[in-house]
Length: 445
Image (cartoon, helix red, strand yellow):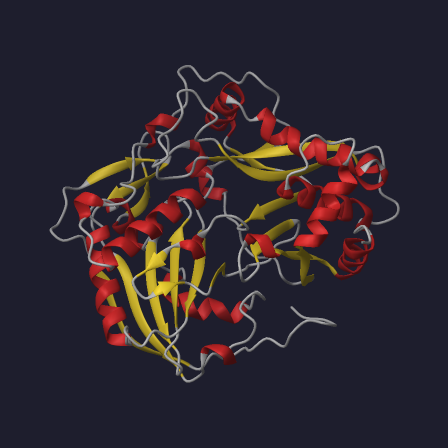
């Protein structure tokens, strides 16, 4: 990563692991198997989230460790599946969670650096993965022995610290992870398990396939794969150039104005996705087929979209991939407002019957989303709004593993109203064109 205008990225965070342990639910829980929906099945990969906290004189490192360790042990009672392990069930070879209380990892580390010496927090630094090293997949360790969740506290010389949480995506989507954070923070502040702010609803059978499965819509956004076990996202960095591009609140407002009068739904998210889609179409090689259908993909929360609605406390993955479709020419050179409308139709399409059709399709075909670009948004998940006893996080970000055609949206420090950061990974020539269009196509004030 890097390039003209990019900040230098610190490679060595000068870390030392002070302690490592495995935490279990206490008291021990009865062993059970946990059903995973078709949505969960395709998300068997690790997500690493780093929460940066400023120094708080009332919470020295020993107190933070004690409070968090106790909170994790207690939160594993309502979230028993976090302490379990993945396995394949016998009949269909589907993934399920063996809630066997095998435990979660808990590491404590220290850095010789101050928090303000590790670099710009907004800029995804691959070295930040060391702040969540507890969650690294162990080479040679079978799936059935890999922890599903881990926690790492890293203290800096200034008294600030980072909380790294690694979890397999089968455990949470963005909304249920935020609920988990709120429950964890509540317990760390001395709350009781029987009065959690948002008790988790863990029955994922609500997103089971219908019997018999009924695919009632075409699904051009999906392609078939032979087996759930093959669905694995791995970084492809050999020939990619990475860039963090920024849109200010003023830039987003100007894109909303540009979308008029052709769009009636110029939300911040829709105009940002439309802008990225347009840049992607224009940055492709000049000899592309302009009549080819281009597709942009993004996740939609279906909790309120299916019938009956899922409980807000539903814990698991309740997101499906929506898509916008238009010809390469229409996306790159057509009216911007019409591109925004094509994006908006993706979420509109995701009503109950369409969502059920996607879930049933997964039983018949075991597939995965496909498209020209997938926009993964951490922009408005609100993880930094969670109030821990030592305060709110200064910044929260995932450990970025840039992949071709997957664009990540991050919030700016100070909140969503400040704008959005965009991480893009493309081959160098495509990246150069993408970056040129990214700023060139923004309306001037």
